[in-house]
Length: 79
Image (cartoon, rainbow, N blue to C red; front, side, top):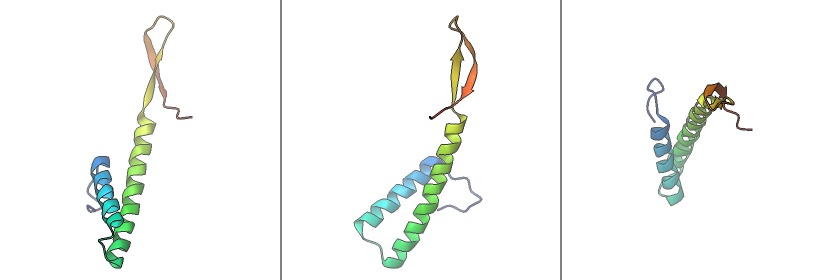
């Protein structure tokens, strides 16, 4: 994984996480390497979860008035 001070995009983190999963599933790693990969995978998963939560919070729905014109926006409601 990149250093903590380097921004890691969702796409890069997800691609790395997928590689880790494939390597662990293949069983090609030593026990020590598997533990390290698992730890890195957990960090990448948390990073991706945070990125998704931030993106969800930024999604807004356009509010349309009775005349069909946009009148504003409301926050995303996943409920």
